[in-house]
Length: 155
Image (cartoon, rainbow, N blue to C red; front, side, top):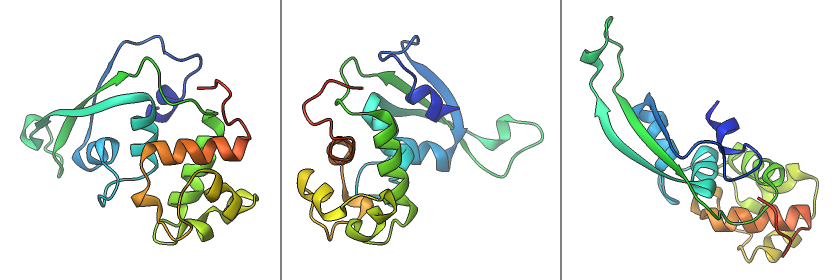
C-alpha cells in the first residue's frame, strides 16, 4: 500500500502527510540513508517524493497479545517538487538494482534489457558502484536515462 501511495499520480497527492505505523525494521528501511544496511528500494521511493521521519517507537507491550517486535510511527510529508522522472522507470531501476544488491550496478542493471554502461554513464554513476551507495538523485538520473526523458518534466 505504501508504494502505491508514494507513486500515486498526479503529484502532489491528495494527502498532505501520511502518519503510519510499521514494524521497526520496515520503518528503518523507509527512512534509511545511502550506505546504511537498511537502504533499499523502499528508501529510494520514499525519499524521492517525501520527507520521511520516524516520530517515535511503540513498545510491543502496548498491544495484546504482545507481538515479538517493536513498532515505529513514521511521518511522510510529500515534497512539493520531487526530482523529475518517470515513476515506472524509477520503479524498474530500483527493482533491478536492489534485486541483486551486493552486485555492482553494471551487472545488476542488466535485467533492464538496456545498455547498462550507457545508462550508468548518462547518470554519471561509476559502473563499479553498488545500489546501496547511490543516493536518490542517482536513481532518478538512471530512471531518466532509461526512459530517455532527460530534461522532460515528469514526476
